[in-house]
Length: 123
Image (tube, rainbow, N blue to C red; front, side, top):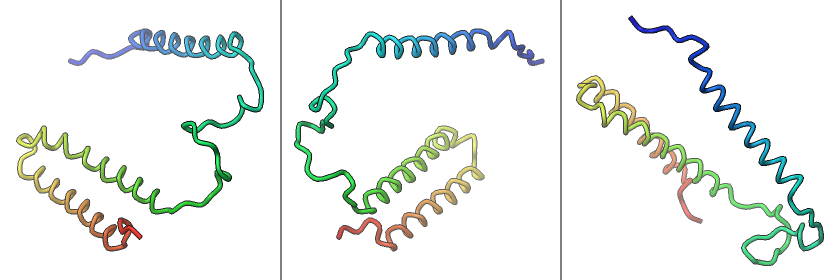
């Protein structure tokens, strides 16, 4: 028979969460009140790797950059699903193998679609 958890069992977690939130609040308050308050034109100017600013930040840029970033994250996350399958390969048996073949088939179909649409093409 499995023991039933009570609200009393969660008390250490709540205490730790309260201490963490309290520390963050204390640290932010201390930094706001005790930190230096220097203002000026140089101080409020944005700093980007020591390079002088040119123009404004509202210049349009290619959407392909975002598409490639999203596709990287998408396919990277799908690869994460392969690890638990590989660890439990023997326990899942033939059914697990067929399910993973179908999953990989969908991933490859998505990759084929992306390549056919020309998202990865450099222009």
